[in-house]
Length: 331
Image (cartoon, rainbow, N blue to C red; front, side, top):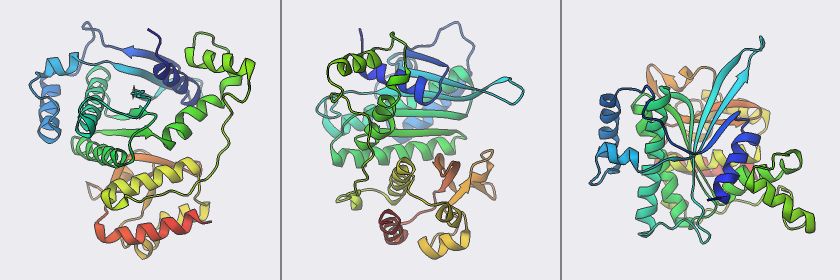
């Protein structure tokens, strides 16, 4: 059966994230070599203790219940024209027209989010054997505002738990404006350069545009001030990630400000934190200070470079964060 959401993600992985290999409804083969079942069982038990994802299911049942909606593998050519692995994307797409709504309301949405992200992450590790260069994504066009806050908090908890287990996976939620800006509009902006008629979503856009070019207008970026009437509901850690996801999407930070944020002294004077707010990503070790992780696993592309974001936040830092954010978004 054709699925518009999966087709959109297929095109997004292929044309926006430059994945040379993309497969919808990915399932592993039982003939593949894997990380040992004992190791996967150990990890799953630790994660279930934290997130209560198994219920009455066994680990075998847990893995058999799902497939990855879209899997993308990005490769890159080095200067010697040798092909090497770049990144794996595992994406779940939930298209509920009236907003994300699994039977059971918010609690059901949270449980599904946890189950899908954790299952996909462990599946990637089990069958590919890597603990970094992986993005695990949950995408849904629309959620209830208060639900979005809670879902982002869950994402943050998952990131922290996988980090403790030695993983450097990036977990992301794309919904509402993020879904539109980072997925839908990016694909729409590529449509004129895509000639593959097998891509259902792209073909549908071209059909609409034959009769009325206004049906699907290309993206015109309008910077709308962020409204956070519920920011007191969101943990400060989730809040800082939310802010930098927005700044990344809009590229609002100047080169000078990015440089300042890499300074420990500046970060302390502005946010009252004890580490540089940003450190440039090189090999992953930058996220650790004296063998302790002090930066989130998720990275942010700002001004052309990739950065780790400091994870050492407390409620006392929140007013300084909000004051700075208001200042940089007014420019």
